[in-house]
Image (tube, rainbow, N blue to C red; front, top):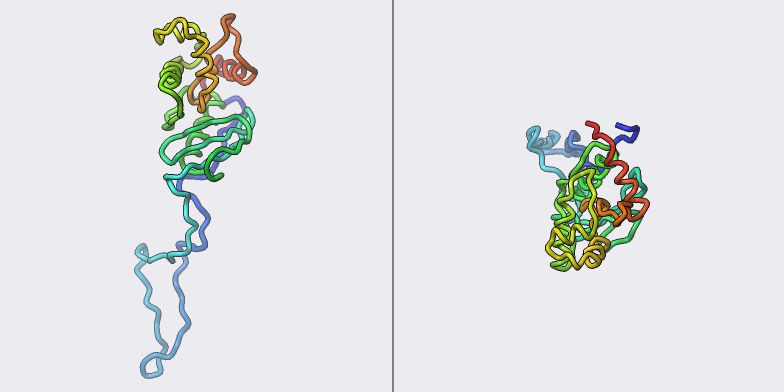
Length: 212
């Protein structure tokens, strides 16, 4: 590690509760038959029924959510639709949906943190960036560029069988809603230079040996 530990966020399914699992139900003793106190019935340990209104509900897995996480490169906002990551944006952004962390956005954030710490070279979190058929084709090709390697939009266009469409390929890369997860930063200019400062920093990171 180079002095940047992986951040800790909400764990999967974690939510504050108003009920302690070890707490047992109590009741006020009232006179029962023959004047003797009435005893409370307690469920066996491990089979107690929890109060139905005690736990804070976790966000639905079907609605769109987004949340901003701190990273080595500044805040990163991640959006998901419940089954896949739909957007990654540098900076604190307001995206469609509810501002709330979920297990999916947190998993994506943890993988990004590991990548930025030099501990991961690829991402396994599911993602679903929205775009045209041509854009999807370009993003899929960009996703196949190996860690630590670069290419140009012209070379990528030739790989796709569209050698004259390198400008359209470049536009598709800039429009990708999930940069970093799709390594668009590995596309450099014709002279081999990164397209911006963030991409330059990411490429510099990938030139360092991975740590475990």
